[in-house]
Amino acid sequence: MNLQRLRYLREIVRRDLNLTAAAAALHTSQPGVSRQILELEDELGCRMFERHGRRLSSLTEPGRAALAIAERVLEDLEDLRRVGREWSDGNTGTLTIATTHTQARYTLPAVVAEFRRLHPQVAVTLRQGDPDEVVRCVLAGKADLAVATEAVSRVEQLEATAFLQWSHVAVVLPEHPLAVYRNATEEALAPGPLSAQHLAQFPLLTYDVAFAGRNAIDLAFADAGLRPEVAISALDADVIKTYVKLGLGVGLIASVAFDASADAPLIAIPCRHLFGTKTSFVALPKARTPRRFVTRFVELLTSASAVV
Image (cartoon, rainbow, N blue to C red):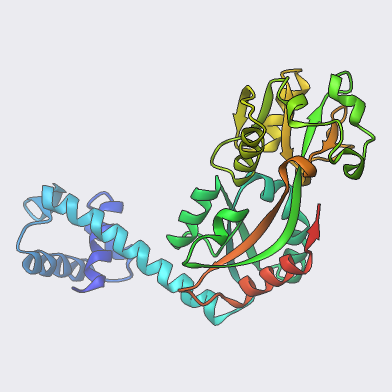
């Protein structure tokens, strides 16, 4: 199959079946375009266009099907060329990160900013979703790497590196009954008065069941023999905090997602002693060799490792 014929087919349709205009756009002659289309029709064994005299009047049914395939093939070809350009020049291209909202909003900004300072010619694309969507995105080749919690570390096809440990906090309004623990330290609380039993007395607002953090919360209550009311579940902490501010209950979110200044008047109560510590990972597909700037981003992220 001659790819040039597919380009001619696509350009003719783009030029409203005007062979002269298509030839000009392709920097060739009108007879040359006509010949390539006739040869394509001979090769496929069917007509691509209906004709009125020497003029093309419309696409045939097989012509429409061939056009759709031609567009996909030519787009894929351009993607291949883009990959080649990006691999040949390690300082240009696009870094695509599949991640959750919390990581994109709270964990990655400083690292992305430093990466962009070091690699100003590399664009960064963030593809956000729940942990399962993040994994699927990377495995399908739609992202260079994944940043999420334990979900990515359990996938055999991914090489995961831990870079951040965090715990949960309960966020409430200052007038909430649990606000009396606002100045308590985790050491004072464990195994102190703030218990799963106290939290279970109030409607809870927390993460969707797709998140590893939600599983830890559910297990802690189950171990205590409790079935609290989860009034609202959401994919990101910002949504949870919004509803807590409306007085709808107690928010249980990742500690990295709380900023005392930005989230005022909400206050945060440590819950590490109740729900344990979670780990965030950056993961690369084992089957693909990362580009140089992808490796550099991972180095920047892991060098900023912390416990929150």
